[in-house]
Structures are given as structure tokens and as C-alpha cells.
Length: 109
Length: 114
Image (cartoon, rainbow over all chains, first blue to last red; front, top):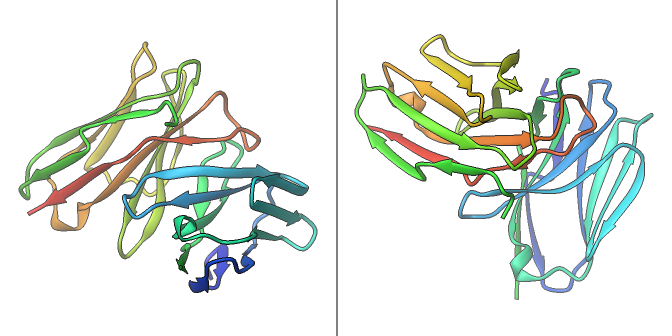
């Protein structure tokens, strides 16, 4: 069993829709990362959070440490949000990450 | 722009060859992580350095090695290359060790082994 599970694997939405991507993990952690990978391949860090909720523009990330679950929400989705969204958690005390398989989001105009 | 630079952007080479990938961390970051992204395995941690010392090792093959230099840039050496080594190689940097530090990713080096 993968230590980091994401759902859904693929998601197609219409512009303007509210989107939710889920991440569950089995290891004990103190922080979780949400990353965005565009078709060109580059990876951008969106959030690092250890409790509660964080918001950046139209993106919101939440985490429940007790339930080992995090969600990434995108409000008023736009075609430029089309990307792969990856959840990652630290594997050890040094901070090296293990990754979910990613959620491929496609937002249609 | 994350502030992390990687060279080269693309590399095409033949099986059996050796290549060196280079990473310069963000100014002030002491920790460098190397990750490999292949189609079948996804993103995997390879190795981590902090202030010149190796601190953690992941799924790194014996044919691969890395080091971090006094100016904090890092190099990943891949030798006796096989077709299966074709992948995107990312480095990331963070200011310190530990779970509570954000990692900033470089643009990656796309390696194609033919």
C-alpha cells in the first residue's frame, strides 16, 4: 500500500467549478506539502501546512492530522489551473519527501 | 522562479555513458534534495545533503552518486546509464533540515538514455 494516496487520479472540470482533491497518508507527520506540476514539467510548492487551513488566492488547503487527511480546494477554477497536483509528506526527520501519484486536473473553458 | 537552478535542462545520451547533473540551491539554503520522476515510479527521493554532508539516502542506485560542494551547489553523477534511467531529475533546496521547512524545486533536468 502506497503511504500517500490521492484521489481522484484524473479530474475534468468546467471553468468556474469548485474542485476538491484529497490526500490520505499512513505515516505520522508534522507537515504536509501540496505541489503543482505544469505540463512543462516544473514543480511549484503551493502549500506546506501542519494544521488547520491555509489560503492563497483561489486555493485553499486543509489538513486533519488526527485523521491523516488533507484536501486541496480550488474555487472558481480556470483553464490555467490545469496541471498535476501532488501531495507529499516527509518520510523522516531530515525532511525528505514521499509523494502521492498525483491528480491530473483539466479545466475546460 | 524558485531561485533553484539546474543544468542542463535536457540531456540525451547513450546507454553505458556517464553524466553529471548540477544544482544550485536558493541563496542561503543549506539543504539539497535530489528526486527522480519516471513514468512508472513517479517521484522518488534519491539523496539529501546538508551543508556538505550526506544526511539521508533513498532509492538511489549504486551507479549513482552525489556530492555537495563548499559553495553549496550539488552534483548528481549517473554512470553506466541504462534505458530505465530516463527520467526527470529534480533538485530541491530548503533553508535547514527537518519536516517543517518548505522545499523549493528547480526546473529539472530531463535525461533521455537511448
